[in-house]
Image (cartoon, rainbow, N blue to C red):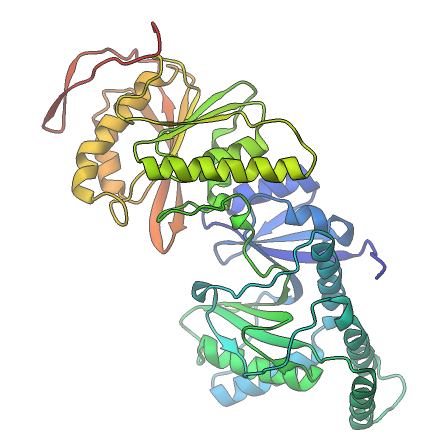
Length: 471
Protein backbone atom coordinates (compact mmCIF):
# COMPACT_ATOMS: atom_id res chain seq x y z
CA UNK A 1 0.00 0.00 0.00
CA UNK A 2 1.30 3.43 -0.93
CA UNK A 3 1.58 5.74 2.08
CA UNK A 4 0.28 9.11 0.91
CA UNK A 5 0.79 12.16 3.10
CA UNK A 6 -2.90 12.99 3.21
CA UNK A 7 -4.54 15.15 5.86
CA UNK A 8 -6.62 13.19 8.35
CA UNK A 9 -8.21 13.78 11.74
CA UNK A 10 -7.18 11.39 14.50
CA UNK A 11 -9.20 11.17 17.70
CA UNK A 12 -7.63 10.04 20.96
CA UNK A 13 -8.88 9.25 24.43
CA UNK A 14 -6.76 10.68 27.26
CA UNK A 15 -7.00 10.66 31.07
CA UNK A 16 -9.78 13.05 32.04
CA UNK A 17 -8.35 16.30 33.32
CA UNK A 18 -5.19 15.96 31.23
CA UNK A 19 -6.66 16.97 27.87
CA UNK A 20 -4.63 20.20 27.66
CA UNK A 21 -1.50 18.39 28.82
CA UNK A 22 -1.95 15.90 25.98
CA UNK A 23 -2.50 18.77 23.53
CA UNK A 24 0.80 20.30 24.66
CA UNK A 25 2.62 17.03 23.94
CA UNK A 26 1.07 16.89 20.45
CA UNK A 27 2.26 20.42 19.73
CA UNK A 28 5.72 19.70 21.14
CA UNK A 29 6.40 16.39 19.38
CA UNK A 30 4.33 16.55 16.19
CA UNK A 31 4.18 20.32 15.66
CA UNK A 32 0.45 19.85 15.18
CA UNK A 33 -2.56 21.44 16.83
CA UNK A 34 -4.89 19.35 18.97
CA UNK A 35 -8.47 20.34 19.72
CA UNK A 36 -9.97 19.47 23.09
CA UNK A 37 -13.39 17.87 22.77
CA UNK A 38 -16.49 19.08 24.59
CA UNK A 39 -16.67 15.55 25.93
CA UNK A 40 -14.01 15.20 28.63
CA UNK A 41 -11.22 12.75 27.98
CA UNK A 42 -10.89 13.25 24.21
CA UNK A 43 -8.75 15.33 21.87
CA UNK A 44 -8.56 15.56 18.07
CA UNK A 45 -5.38 15.89 15.99
CA UNK A 46 -5.21 17.21 12.44
CA UNK A 47 -2.15 15.51 10.94
CA UNK A 48 -0.85 14.00 7.73
CA UNK A 49 -0.66 10.23 7.41
CA UNK A 50 3.15 10.24 7.45
CA UNK A 51 2.94 11.16 11.16
CA UNK A 52 0.65 8.29 12.11
CA UNK A 53 3.53 6.18 13.44
CA UNK A 54 4.63 9.06 15.70
CA UNK A 55 1.09 9.38 17.08
CA UNK A 56 1.37 5.83 18.41
CA UNK A 57 4.50 6.89 20.31
CA UNK A 58 2.86 9.77 22.21
CA UNK A 59 2.77 9.13 25.95
CA UNK A 60 -0.47 10.95 26.82
CA UNK A 61 -2.86 8.98 24.62
CA UNK A 62 -4.82 5.87 25.60
CA UNK A 63 -6.79 4.82 22.49
CA UNK A 64 -6.69 6.11 18.92
CA UNK A 65 -9.29 6.29 16.15
CA UNK A 66 -9.54 7.91 12.74
CA UNK A 67 -12.51 10.23 12.33
CA UNK A 68 -14.87 9.32 9.49
CA UNK A 69 -17.16 12.31 10.08
CA UNK A 70 -18.02 14.62 12.96
CA UNK A 71 -21.14 16.68 13.55
CA UNK A 72 -21.08 19.57 16.01
CA UNK A 73 -24.86 19.95 16.17
CA UNK A 74 -26.60 16.78 15.03
CA UNK A 75 -30.38 17.14 15.10
CA UNK A 76 -31.78 13.93 16.55
CA UNK A 77 -35.38 12.99 15.82
CA UNK A 78 -37.88 12.69 18.66
CA UNK A 79 -38.89 9.03 18.24
CA UNK A 80 -36.87 5.81 18.15
CA UNK A 81 -38.33 4.86 14.77
CA UNK A 82 -37.22 8.13 13.18
CA UNK A 83 -33.76 7.88 14.77
CA UNK A 84 -33.39 4.34 13.42
CA UNK A 85 -34.13 5.55 9.90
CA UNK A 86 -31.59 8.35 10.41
CA UNK A 87 -28.86 5.84 11.34
CA UNK A 88 -29.61 3.80 8.20
CA UNK A 89 -29.34 6.90 6.01
CA UNK A 90 -26.20 8.11 7.77
CA UNK A 91 -24.30 4.87 7.15
CA UNK A 92 -24.80 5.18 3.39
CA UNK A 93 -23.64 8.79 3.02
CA UNK A 94 -20.59 8.85 5.30
CA UNK A 95 -17.17 9.34 3.59
CA UNK A 96 -15.73 5.95 4.55
CA UNK A 97 -12.98 5.70 1.91
CA UNK A 98 -10.26 7.87 3.45
CA UNK A 99 -10.85 6.47 6.94
CA UNK A 100 -10.54 2.91 5.63
CA UNK A 101 -7.28 3.83 3.90
CA UNK A 102 -5.91 5.13 7.21
CA UNK A 103 -7.13 1.94 8.91
CA UNK A 104 -5.20 -0.15 6.37
CA UNK A 105 -2.10 2.01 6.80
CA UNK A 106 -2.39 1.61 10.56
CA UNK A 107 -2.52 -2.18 10.16
CA UNK A 108 0.69 -2.09 8.13
CA UNK A 109 2.34 -0.04 10.89
CA UNK A 110 1.28 -2.57 13.51
CA UNK A 111 2.54 -5.37 11.28
CA UNK A 112 5.97 -3.78 11.00
CA UNK A 113 6.08 -3.35 14.77
CA UNK A 114 5.22 -7.01 15.24
CA UNK A 115 2.01 -6.28 17.10
CA UNK A 116 -0.39 -8.63 15.36
CA UNK A 117 -1.84 -10.32 18.46
CA UNK A 118 -5.44 -9.29 19.08
CA UNK A 119 -6.83 -9.24 22.61
CA UNK A 120 -10.41 -8.78 23.71
CA UNK A 121 -11.32 -5.32 25.07
CA UNK A 122 -12.27 -5.00 28.72
CA UNK A 123 -15.87 -4.74 29.77
CA UNK A 124 -15.32 -1.16 30.94
CA UNK A 125 -14.43 -0.13 27.36
CA UNK A 126 -17.82 -1.22 26.02
CA UNK A 127 -20.91 0.94 26.31
CA UNK A 128 -23.06 -0.55 23.57
CA UNK A 129 -22.21 -3.13 20.92
CA UNK A 130 -23.87 -4.48 17.80
CA UNK A 131 -22.79 -8.05 17.15
CA UNK A 132 -23.76 -11.54 16.07
CA UNK A 133 -21.97 -14.79 16.81
CA UNK A 134 -19.64 -16.12 14.16
CA UNK A 135 -17.32 -19.11 14.11
CA UNK A 136 -15.27 -17.97 11.10
CA UNK A 137 -11.57 -17.52 11.64
CA UNK A 138 -9.95 -14.11 11.30
CA UNK A 139 -7.23 -13.68 8.65
CA UNK A 140 -3.94 -13.20 10.45
CA UNK A 141 -2.50 -10.83 7.84
CA UNK A 142 -4.26 -7.48 7.33
CA UNK A 143 -3.07 -7.49 3.72
CA UNK A 144 -5.41 -10.43 3.09
CA UNK A 145 -8.27 -8.09 3.93
CA UNK A 146 -7.31 -5.27 1.58
CA UNK A 147 -8.64 -6.92 -1.58
CA UNK A 148 -12.13 -6.91 -0.10
CA UNK A 149 -11.75 -3.31 1.04
CA UNK A 150 -10.75 -2.19 -2.45
CA UNK A 151 -14.00 -3.59 -3.88
CA UNK A 152 -15.95 -1.89 -1.11
CA UNK A 153 -14.28 1.45 -1.85
CA UNK A 154 -15.15 1.15 -5.53
CA UNK A 155 -18.77 0.56 -4.58
CA UNK A 156 -18.82 3.58 -2.29
CA UNK A 157 -17.25 5.86 -4.89
CA UNK A 158 -19.77 4.77 -7.46
CA UNK A 159 -22.62 5.59 -5.10
CA UNK A 160 -21.18 9.01 -4.24
CA UNK A 161 -20.33 10.12 -7.77
CA UNK A 162 -23.17 8.36 -9.59
CA UNK A 163 -21.95 9.77 -12.91
CA UNK A 164 -22.87 6.54 -14.66
CA UNK A 165 -26.23 4.96 -13.80
CA UNK A 166 -25.65 1.42 -12.63
CA UNK A 167 -27.76 -1.18 -10.87
CA UNK A 168 -26.60 -1.36 -7.24
CA UNK A 169 -28.04 -4.80 -6.74
CA UNK A 170 -26.20 -6.15 -9.78
CA UNK A 171 -22.99 -4.54 -8.50
CA UNK A 172 -23.38 -6.20 -5.10
CA UNK A 173 -24.04 -9.56 -6.70
CA UNK A 174 -20.93 -9.15 -8.86
CA UNK A 175 -18.87 -8.24 -5.76
CA UNK A 176 -20.16 -11.30 -3.90
CA UNK A 177 -19.28 -13.54 -6.85
CA UNK A 178 -15.78 -12.04 -6.91
CA UNK A 179 -15.38 -12.70 -3.18
CA UNK A 180 -16.47 -16.31 -3.58
CA UNK A 181 -14.13 -16.88 -6.50
CA UNK A 182 -11.15 -15.20 -4.85
CA UNK A 183 -11.77 -16.84 -1.49
CA UNK A 184 -11.49 -13.51 0.37
CA UNK A 185 -13.08 -13.64 3.81
CA UNK A 186 -15.48 -10.72 4.42
CA UNK A 187 -14.38 -8.32 7.12
CA UNK A 188 -15.78 -8.75 10.59
CA UNK A 189 -16.80 -5.72 12.58
CA UNK A 190 -18.56 -4.39 15.60
CA UNK A 191 -20.02 -1.02 16.52
CA UNK A 192 -19.26 0.46 19.94
CA UNK A 193 -21.36 3.40 21.08
CA UNK A 194 -20.31 5.82 23.84
CA UNK A 195 -23.19 8.16 24.67
CA UNK A 196 -23.55 11.03 27.14
CA UNK A 197 -26.60 13.27 27.52
CA UNK A 198 -30.13 13.03 28.89
CA UNK A 199 -32.11 14.36 25.92
CA UNK A 200 -31.87 11.27 23.72
CA UNK A 201 -34.82 8.97 23.06
CA UNK A 202 -32.46 5.99 22.62
CA UNK A 203 -29.84 4.11 24.61
CA UNK A 204 -26.24 3.28 23.69
CA UNK A 205 -27.30 -0.26 22.83
CA UNK A 206 -30.10 1.04 20.60
CA UNK A 207 -27.72 3.27 18.68
CA UNK A 208 -25.06 0.57 18.33
CA UNK A 209 -27.60 -2.00 17.15
CA UNK A 210 -29.37 0.24 14.62
CA UNK A 211 -26.25 1.90 13.23
CA UNK A 212 -24.46 -1.46 13.17
CA UNK A 213 -27.26 -2.98 11.14
CA UNK A 214 -27.01 -0.14 8.65
CA UNK A 215 -23.21 -0.53 8.38
CA UNK A 216 -23.59 -4.27 7.87
CA UNK A 217 -26.14 -3.78 5.11
CA UNK A 218 -24.02 -1.14 3.38
CA UNK A 219 -20.68 -3.02 3.45
CA UNK A 220 -21.92 -6.61 3.66
CA UNK A 221 -19.53 -7.17 6.56
CA UNK A 222 -20.06 -9.82 9.19
CA UNK A 223 -20.78 -8.75 12.77
CA UNK A 224 -18.62 -10.26 15.52
CA UNK A 225 -18.16 -8.71 18.96
CA UNK A 226 -14.90 -10.45 19.92
CA UNK A 227 -13.05 -11.49 16.74
CA UNK A 228 -13.63 -8.31 14.79
CA UNK A 229 -11.29 -6.76 12.22
CA UNK A 230 -12.86 -3.30 12.21
CA UNK A 231 -14.32 -1.52 15.23
CA UNK A 232 -16.67 1.28 14.25
CA UNK A 233 -17.01 3.92 16.97
CA UNK A 234 -20.13 6.00 17.46
CA UNK A 235 -19.42 8.74 20.03
CA UNK A 236 -22.41 10.84 21.07
CA UNK A 237 -22.18 13.74 23.53
CA UNK A 238 -25.45 15.67 23.67
CA UNK A 239 -25.76 16.89 20.06
CA UNK A 240 -22.14 16.22 19.11
CA UNK A 241 -21.72 13.04 17.05
CA UNK A 242 -18.39 11.58 15.89
CA UNK A 243 -18.11 8.43 13.77
CA UNK A 244 -14.69 6.80 13.67
CA UNK A 245 -12.67 3.62 13.11
CA UNK A 246 -10.56 2.33 16.00
CA UNK A 247 -6.80 2.22 15.40
CA UNK A 248 -5.88 0.53 18.69
CA UNK A 249 -7.15 -2.77 20.04
CA UNK A 250 -5.46 -2.49 23.43
CA UNK A 251 -4.95 0.81 25.25
CA UNK A 252 -1.48 2.32 24.79
CA UNK A 253 -1.25 2.92 28.57
CA UNK A 254 -0.05 -0.66 29.14
CA UNK A 255 3.25 0.02 27.41
CA UNK A 256 5.70 -0.19 30.36
CA UNK A 257 4.08 -2.42 32.99
CA UNK A 258 4.39 -6.21 32.91
CA UNK A 259 3.80 -6.92 36.64
CA UNK A 260 0.59 -5.30 37.85
CA UNK A 261 -0.54 -4.67 41.40
CA UNK A 262 -4.02 -4.03 42.86
CA UNK A 263 -3.78 -0.26 42.30
CA UNK A 264 -1.32 0.10 39.41
CA UNK A 265 -1.52 3.61 37.95
CA UNK A 266 -2.15 3.99 34.22
CA UNK A 267 1.04 4.99 32.41
CA UNK A 268 -0.79 7.79 30.60
CA UNK A 269 -1.94 9.29 33.90
CA UNK A 270 1.58 8.93 35.34
CA UNK A 271 2.98 10.76 32.32
CA UNK A 272 0.48 13.57 32.73
CA UNK A 273 1.49 14.00 36.37
CA UNK A 274 5.16 14.11 35.38
CA UNK A 275 4.53 16.83 32.81
CA UNK A 276 3.01 18.94 35.57
CA UNK A 277 6.39 18.73 37.34
CA UNK A 278 8.35 19.98 34.31
CA UNK A 279 11.49 17.91 35.19
CA UNK A 280 14.83 19.56 34.42
CA UNK A 281 18.28 18.14 33.74
CA UNK A 282 19.90 16.68 36.90
CA UNK A 283 16.69 16.92 38.96
CA UNK A 284 16.35 14.36 41.76
CA UNK A 285 12.81 13.00 41.53
CA UNK A 286 11.38 10.76 44.26
CA UNK A 287 8.29 8.57 44.37
CA UNK A 288 8.04 7.52 48.05
CA UNK A 289 5.00 5.26 47.48
CA UNK A 290 5.86 3.79 44.09
CA UNK A 291 3.77 0.60 44.14
CA UNK A 292 4.62 -1.19 40.89
CA UNK A 293 6.75 1.73 39.69
CA UNK A 294 4.47 3.20 37.02
CA UNK A 295 5.50 6.82 37.69
CA UNK A 296 9.31 6.42 37.86
CA UNK A 297 9.30 4.03 34.89
CA UNK A 298 7.38 6.52 32.79
CA UNK A 299 9.78 9.22 33.97
CA UNK A 300 13.04 7.48 33.07
CA UNK A 301 11.75 6.67 29.58
CA UNK A 302 11.07 10.35 28.85
CA UNK A 303 13.45 12.35 31.08
CA UNK A 304 16.68 10.35 31.04
CA UNK A 305 18.79 13.28 32.22
CA UNK A 306 17.03 13.34 35.60
CA UNK A 307 17.58 10.84 38.40
CA UNK A 308 14.64 8.88 39.81
CA UNK A 309 14.45 7.24 43.21
CA UNK A 310 11.47 5.04 44.05
CA UNK A 311 10.50 3.20 47.17
CA UNK A 312 7.67 1.56 49.08
CA UNK A 313 7.19 0.05 52.52
CA UNK A 314 5.66 -3.07 50.98
CA UNK A 315 8.16 -5.71 49.91
CA UNK A 316 5.84 -7.21 47.29
CA UNK A 317 5.38 -3.82 45.66
CA UNK A 318 9.14 -3.28 45.54
CA UNK A 319 9.59 -6.71 43.91
CA UNK A 320 7.01 -5.82 41.25
CA UNK A 321 8.84 -2.55 40.57
CA UNK A 322 12.14 -4.39 40.17
CA UNK A 323 10.55 -6.88 37.76
CA UNK A 324 9.05 -4.05 35.71
CA UNK A 325 12.47 -2.39 35.51
CA UNK A 326 13.99 -5.68 34.32
CA UNK A 327 11.26 -5.90 31.68
CA UNK A 328 12.10 -2.41 30.38
CA UNK A 329 15.85 -3.13 30.40
CA UNK A 330 15.34 -6.34 28.43
CA UNK A 331 13.18 -4.51 25.90
CA UNK A 332 15.75 -1.73 25.42
CA UNK A 333 18.56 -4.33 25.21
CA UNK A 334 16.65 -6.22 22.50
CA UNK A 335 16.46 -2.96 20.55
CA UNK A 336 20.24 -2.60 20.68
CA UNK A 337 20.65 -0.24 23.63
CA UNK A 338 23.20 -1.21 26.29
CA UNK A 339 22.66 1.75 28.64
CA UNK A 340 20.94 1.38 31.99
CA UNK A 341 18.23 3.48 33.58
CA UNK A 342 18.76 6.43 35.97
CA UNK A 343 16.52 4.76 38.54
CA UNK A 344 16.93 3.04 41.90
CA UNK A 345 14.30 1.21 43.96
CA UNK A 346 14.44 0.96 47.76
CA UNK A 347 12.22 -0.52 50.46
CA UNK A 348 11.74 2.15 53.13
CA UNK A 349 9.51 3.80 55.71
CA UNK A 350 7.98 6.73 53.86
CA UNK A 351 7.63 8.71 57.11
CA UNK A 352 11.38 8.35 57.77
CA UNK A 353 13.05 8.51 54.39
CA UNK A 354 16.78 7.59 54.36
CA UNK A 355 17.71 10.83 52.61
CA UNK A 356 19.44 14.08 53.46
CA UNK A 357 17.30 17.11 54.22
CA UNK A 358 16.83 19.59 51.35
CA UNK A 359 18.14 17.14 48.73
CA UNK A 360 15.12 16.48 46.49
CA UNK A 361 13.81 18.59 43.59
CA UNK A 362 10.49 16.85 42.94
CA UNK A 363 8.22 14.53 44.91
CA UNK A 364 5.59 12.76 42.82
CA UNK A 365 3.40 9.90 44.02
CA UNK A 366 0.03 8.19 44.01
CA UNK A 367 -1.10 8.36 47.66
CA UNK A 368 -3.36 5.66 49.16
CA UNK A 369 -7.03 6.46 48.55
CA UNK A 370 -8.23 4.43 51.53
CA UNK A 371 -10.32 2.23 49.22
CA UNK A 372 -8.49 -0.84 47.91
CA UNK A 373 -5.31 0.02 49.82
CA UNK A 374 -5.19 1.36 53.37
CA UNK A 375 -8.21 3.00 54.97
CA UNK A 376 -9.70 6.45 55.40
CA UNK A 377 -9.01 6.25 59.13
CA UNK A 378 -5.31 5.49 58.64
CA UNK A 379 -5.01 8.34 56.14
CA UNK A 380 -5.75 10.88 58.89
CA UNK A 381 -2.52 9.78 60.58
CA UNK A 382 -0.50 8.98 57.47
CA UNK A 383 -1.05 12.11 55.35
CA UNK A 384 0.32 14.67 57.87
CA UNK A 385 3.41 12.55 58.54
CA UNK A 386 4.00 12.08 54.79
CA UNK A 387 3.66 15.78 53.95
CA UNK A 388 6.02 16.78 56.74
CA UNK A 389 8.67 14.22 55.77
CA UNK A 390 8.35 15.30 52.13
CA UNK A 391 8.91 18.90 53.23
CA UNK A 392 12.05 17.84 55.09
CA UNK A 393 13.76 16.19 52.11
CA UNK A 394 12.66 18.80 49.55
CA UNK A 395 14.72 21.89 48.71
CA UNK A 396 13.14 24.99 50.30
CA UNK A 397 11.91 27.60 47.84
CA UNK A 398 12.34 25.54 44.66
CA UNK A 399 11.06 21.98 45.12
CA UNK A 400 7.66 20.80 43.92
CA UNK A 401 5.30 17.98 44.81
CA UNK A 402 2.62 16.43 42.60
CA UNK A 403 0.36 14.20 44.67
CA UNK A 404 -2.63 12.14 43.53
CA UNK A 405 -5.37 11.26 46.03
CA UNK A 406 -9.08 10.64 46.16
CA UNK A 407 -9.22 11.38 49.90
CA UNK A 408 -9.44 15.12 49.28
CA UNK A 409 -10.88 16.15 52.67
CA UNK A 410 -8.12 14.41 54.61
CA UNK A 411 -5.40 15.74 52.31
CA UNK A 412 -6.51 19.38 52.50
CA UNK A 413 -6.82 19.18 56.28
CA UNK A 414 -3.32 17.74 56.56
CA UNK A 415 -1.99 20.41 54.21
CA UNK A 416 -3.45 23.15 56.38
CA UNK A 417 -1.46 21.82 59.35
CA UNK A 418 1.92 22.07 57.64
CA UNK A 419 2.85 25.42 59.22
CA UNK A 420 3.53 27.08 55.88
CA UNK A 421 5.92 24.41 54.55
CA UNK A 422 3.79 23.84 51.44
CA UNK A 423 1.76 26.13 49.19
CA UNK A 424 -0.90 24.69 46.88
CA UNK A 425 -0.37 25.89 43.31
CA UNK A 426 -3.34 24.29 41.55
CA UNK A 427 -5.36 21.09 41.28
CA UNK A 428 -6.16 18.89 38.29
CA UNK A 429 -9.34 16.85 38.75
CA UNK A 430 -9.16 13.38 37.21
CA UNK A 431 -11.12 10.16 36.97
CA UNK A 432 -9.25 7.15 38.34
CA UNK A 433 -11.12 3.89 37.93
CA UNK A 434 -14.45 5.67 38.31
CA UNK A 435 -13.29 7.62 41.37
CA UNK A 436 -13.17 11.42 41.35
CA UNK A 437 -9.63 12.25 42.44
CA UNK A 438 -7.37 15.26 42.51
CA UNK A 439 -3.77 15.81 41.41
CA UNK A 440 -2.48 18.46 43.82
CA UNK A 441 0.48 20.52 42.64
CA UNK A 442 2.39 21.94 45.64
CA UNK A 443 5.32 24.34 45.89
CA UNK A 444 7.85 24.03 48.71
CA UNK A 445 8.05 27.39 50.44
CA UNK A 446 11.27 28.95 51.71
CA UNK A 447 10.25 28.16 55.30
CA UNK A 448 13.10 26.25 56.92
CA UNK A 449 12.19 22.82 58.22
CA UNK A 450 12.90 22.58 61.95
CA UNK A 451 13.36 19.19 63.60
CA UNK A 452 11.57 18.68 66.88
CA UNK A 453 8.31 17.89 68.51
CA UNK A 454 5.16 19.03 66.72
CA UNK A 455 1.45 18.55 67.27
CA UNK A 456 -0.51 17.50 64.20
CA UNK A 457 -4.28 17.15 64.37
CA UNK A 458 -4.25 15.87 67.94
CA UNK A 459 -1.45 13.40 67.26
CA UNK A 460 1.84 14.12 69.06
CA UNK A 461 4.81 12.71 67.19
CA UNK A 462 8.54 13.04 67.30
CA UNK A 463 10.08 13.56 63.86
CA UNK A 464 13.48 11.95 64.08
CA UNK A 465 16.29 12.55 61.69
CA UNK A 466 17.54 9.58 59.67
CA UNK A 467 19.85 10.47 56.86
CA UNK A 468 22.60 9.06 54.76
CA UNK A 469 24.91 11.77 55.99
CA UNK A 470 24.97 15.25 57.46
CA UNK A 471 22.38 17.65 56.08
